[in-house]
Image (cartoon, rainbow, N blue to C red; front, side, top):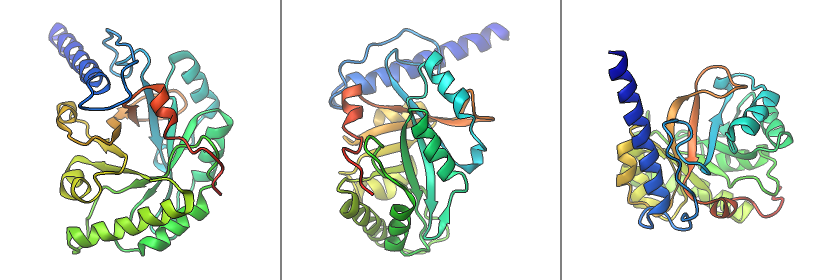
Length: 259
């Protein structure tokens, strides 16, 4: 049984490595991604030698030991970026956002801030609250909208998409850049694919075979696990990989201070 478990773990890790390699190297999946070298590794968290990996955090991850997390990056070359929950709705700020936001910059992580979209709050007020809360600086990652559920809403898909578009437009008008949409596979198929095909996409899907079937040319980031482990954070943490080269990664950083 132990040998069987080991072999299953090996082949799962090998498959994930091969899958991300396909996403990065084959042009149908992503442009500007041809200079990342493949590493024949069975390490699930390090499928590519030069891949750009990151985590996303909120208050649910508890207080981060940033010194230890930075040390982890220096020894393990991971994580390169940290996406941090900033706001939700029109009046809720994550209680650890300011601390995480400041510490991420101080410890030289590429940082990004995301807003959890609410279907019961005015979308323009939500965007304004997000912009007021986040002190964007040069080299921060583009703004991110977390749009992953329509639970509790009786609005049509078209009406929901219209509200989401108001948030996206308000942020773009203020920052001069198109936000990234974070979503899951069901929400992508129901709304995002139809109404927002031209927006950079961060997809959450832990069933790796699904990713090879994505037909979005804007697929930018894949959240492939919710049970990762990094030093400096107690408990499980979400793991992500940027699909592309370091050169492409730089294209999604803010070019100037925006607030």
